[in-house]
Each structure stands twice: as structure tokens, then as C-alpha cells.
Length: 77
View 1 (cartoon, rainbow, N blue to C red):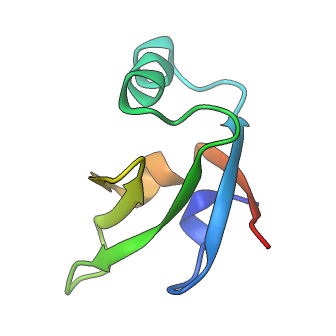
View 2: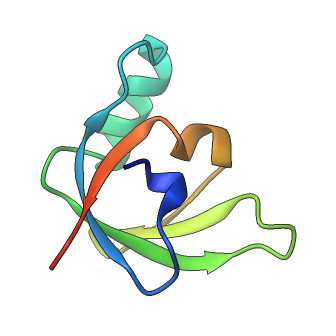
View 3: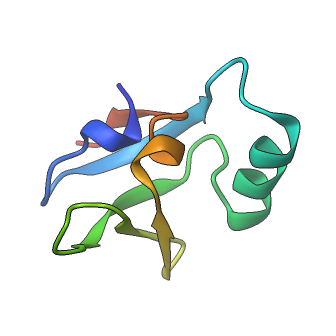
């Protein structure tokens, strides 16, 4: 499942970054803490639904939908 498909109220665990992701974008994700096993959830959605603010490691990070589609997640229990 892609991070962009996450619904409000759902928590997810990051599984990795999509293959074919440009190296600079991949490195930016890693620098922001988007690593395997990290828990993430939607903190807020902008009025036009793009970007979306996600909470990861007690930090709020805003991502455009096109970037969120590169992050692979599974739903947390």
C-alpha cells in the first residue's frame, strides 16, 4: 500500500521507498526518518487535499501527494 492511500485515523508502518525513486528524493526521505519500521499517520490535510501533513517520530512533515506515492507502508494493528 502507498502512503498516499492512508486514511485519516489509520496508522501505518513504513516498509520502504518505491523502486525507481530518484536518488535525491530517496535520500531526503531517509533524512526525514522515513525508514523501515517507522510508524506514521496523517496529522492534517490541507483544504485542497495536497499537501498532507504526516506525523513520524513526533515530527510533523508535509508531503505532496506525488511524493507520498513513493512511500510503501502496511497498516499498523
